[in-house]
Amino acid sequence: MLKNSANYIYQVYKEKSFSKAAQKLFVSQPALSAAIQKEEAVWGCSFFDRSTNPIELTPEGRAFIAAIERMKDIQQELETYFEAHIQERQHTLNIGAPAFFCAYVLPPIIQEFQMNHPTCRINIIEACDEDLMECLQRDTIDACLTVQTWPSSMFKSTAIGEEDVILAVPAAFPVNKKLSEYQLGADDIKNASRLRDGCPRISVGEFKDMPFLLLKQGNDMYSRAIKICKQEGFAPNTFVTLAQLLTSYHMVAAGMGVAFIRAGLMSYVHGDVCFYALDSQDTVRNINLVCKKNRTLPDTVQKFLSYLSHYYR
Image 1 (spheres, helix red, strand yellow):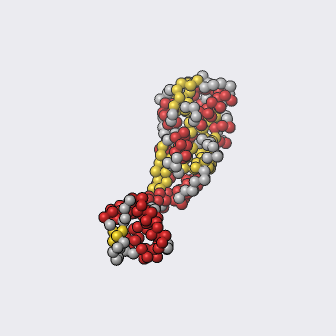
Image 2: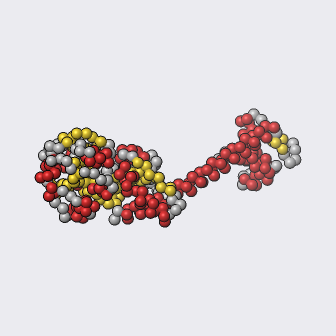
Image 3: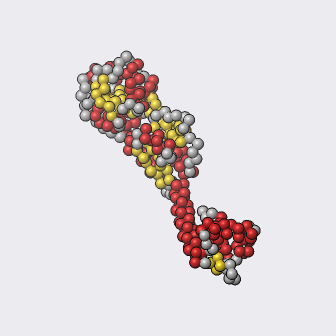
């Protein structure tokens, strides 16, 4: 944006007249002349030859006008760029989530949504919860899926669904033989209502001597695992801590230990693993859709987030 004095000089150059330029700019001619004289004093030269009619530029004036025109071109270029950027941003959603949601949950939902909204572009950012929180704070992403509970002073969190936490045990572990009546079938795991109300449950204390594969501290699954074990009077014998739930499941399948996992994972992975529903109220947790508080999101973004919410209901 040109400052007033530069714009005044440019208008006089275009109109070849102080009086006509003043009319165009809706200022008085004395005010216009005073502003231009002040600018000329700054540069130590005159921009106009006032002895001619119509007035003409001095060499210094031509250099000044050439610079103004370059600035106007740059300004136009910036306006064009950001207008296009704003238009694109109106139809772009950046959504973050942990690995499970990025790998299995979001892709089919996005594909179906884009069939009805072909101009919408959706970017998926995979990250841990700590990084997702930072991305939201910096406006790198518009929203994220998480099972964590974040500060309500900074974030708006909406529970859009629930998921169950179950225990995965390597099939080769001898403990499975005596607990066979408690093992879950595929239908039990995939049917949330049956998993919560119609299947046998067992105390995690039955596995207290087993090696546990836990997610690292700060993860909701870690906190739940410690709490559920504590309710049964023991601390888990932690064999290894991991960053990703998928990794812990594959280590269970490899026979390395037992792990707390999300039941929804069973629709996508296979392995020689036995599953158990635990007798604890802490095995059901919310799936939260989180946005930055007081941030206005484009209409297309809001439509997708609404679509995502209905998907879980």
